[in-house]
Image (tube, rainbow over all chains, first blue to last red):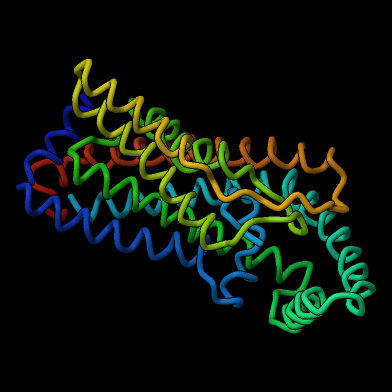
Length: 60
Length: 246
């Protein structure tokens, strides 16, 4: 029932609506991921240093 | 509907970010601190060798420069920065799987949440770790950009395999998925130099296990809470028809 409700919610949207929302979410998500896990800037790197090591991101 | 998905992503990120922060404080951070003690020891060696080789002198200088850079103070400040970056990282991953859910019409529910968690763990932790085992500070590593590129390649290829089998239940899709999982592992990951490290092997081995365990907790919590909250929002009568506001 729950699954049906959520999937109805998803499929009731048009493809273009879904893709626009997906692109927006992906852009935001990648920005956050790159900012915390991959940024070269030393302030971002040092601030998120322990997170990087703890999650197995490539670090120094 | 979009609002619901973003909201569920943020709630999931909050829970998963707090869960990983707790586990990190307990098992990961102590190892990082232990390794940093050895990293400090390594610097002394570098300075001793400075006289002998130009290259080493440059490296030592670069390292000395690194130490002048801003970094959060050990203690409360460092813990706070780690907590915030864990939460932001969690929000990043939550939005990424939310985007995959939207783009490929694969709902995240409590029933499928564990699959999402396992797939996220496999794509973003397990597959990259096979080529680039999680390392502690002070361990010799290959070029960072090359490692990051390989890491992303492994994550995307492995993630694509899960999306493919979730969408298409056919033997050919399964075969392509297996190929996508194997592909990055046959492309050699940047190899770390075999310089001797002062970090004891026991710590190194323990760290790999701890990081994978940490990621597993993170991903399972992220997937399950995301799904549970999606279900919860979908059940609310006001949002059932078209995501109309109450």
